Length: 84
Length: 95
Image (cartoon, rainbow over all chains, first blue to last red; front, side, top):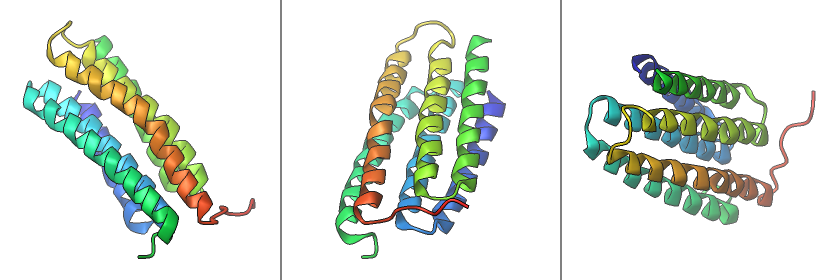
């Protein structure tokens, strides 16, 4: 399980590079979505391994909020093009 | 044992998706890599956590998480692709 945590952390850092670099605003949105996916998986693994059920509730709220945020950002960038 | 193997396979899928996000050419190829590989890899990791240590009450939260991720992954991917396409971004030419 430690290998899984390290791999997910490395993937998270690599995804953040696309978030910083991404040529178009949609690349950044995609990287944000992928990064939040990795954070969710990492939080779930840590919650189970460390036996902290509270972290699972945090994860459920996090996944709902990131879904809402990404949908709202995508809809708003459909109108503004992500420049404003 | 089963749980660790499932989580390792899931982490491998997430790593493949990360390579796709970093290396692919334009936003639509990256969406393909991210959407498909991430949903499957994260689902496998959560499935591995669910089958760990038999059935417990915390597994209900993991199942909820799994259902939510499987439902919302394609919606998010479609939403980003539609947003980019509506704004007239057509991707890179083949080289």
